[in-house]
Image (cartoon, rainbow, N blue to C red; front, top):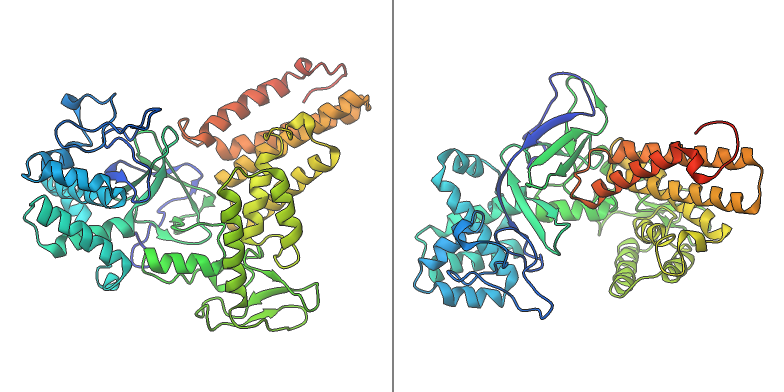
Length: 485
């Protein structure tokens, strides 16, 4: 992973096609992943929640994986089954899944030594071991080293394990698994070389075999940099920079981070409670969050020290409480009404809840598309347009956020057209509404067309194409009028 010292610069002009395709070098479950099969990453729990394990080493393995044909699971299975304390160690690790997955990844990295070229690639990646001293990350690595060296009995210097853990933390990509509740982290030979930027020019996705595909998300000229983001684009600057410093060990100073407005997205902005119309923004976003002043850009009011961070953290806890249960549209509406007094309409927390509400309206029981009033349809449209406006500024070009949001906007327009048809509105108005729905749907497909078919966004792209075929053949909708979509 690179922030400054490694770069990918285009030698020729590209227009949103594959820039890089890379096979996975090493992979394994993330520390915070649910328990998954260590060979296929599938679910390993049945309805009775009994965990099936490998007969050789005692680690999680699903019943569908033939123990005579194991691939991914070989390194840790061989290490534990060859150890005098292997089965005992496995039992202990099953009580500490986070440590289990850390140890598994270390063992898989050590297995790379069997292919010198792969081991050399791995060791060539940045570990930031020095910056990790006396940190929580180093404490985790030390705990893993105890298991690897003392319990399993692998003869290796402790510093080498710490270096491996540093490389994993610094360079891994997290990959959600659509077929199981787990999350995978993976390292690639060259896929982790693109530098970071909070407004990326690259779009990455992961195929079913975990191979990484990187595309230019916007048209680029020769000499332009291919960049990706190693944090959450919908977090405000304060949170992104904190996360990058903790996990990747660098302080981002990209154009978005330097701009108090975050390129006009106002994702971190608070509303001014003094003048009631202005936005409160950090005077210098690159200063320590405990030192920079937050000032209203209209009236000049300076908020109390720590107010912005305290507000962010308190509202984050509220959202976490909402998400701990089954969230519903009423909760989202109440949140938006209550916190719109202090949070800017495009604040990160507002966008979080609005994004949830967008996908609840039309899909939640009692709020299916046919149930939505004109008011709720308009609310769904307004939320979609708000998200698209933000995405245009911070995720230009290809993005999953734009593709999925456009699909929800299409559903809104289509339902409105169907409602008008039922109300007996003029055929010209109905046809125009369906044309608008079709145009938005076509845009959605444009942004989702590259998503792998095993991922939810790829499946949505297929559904969108089916919807487009239906709309194109407008007679299926029973619209008796002249013209075509």
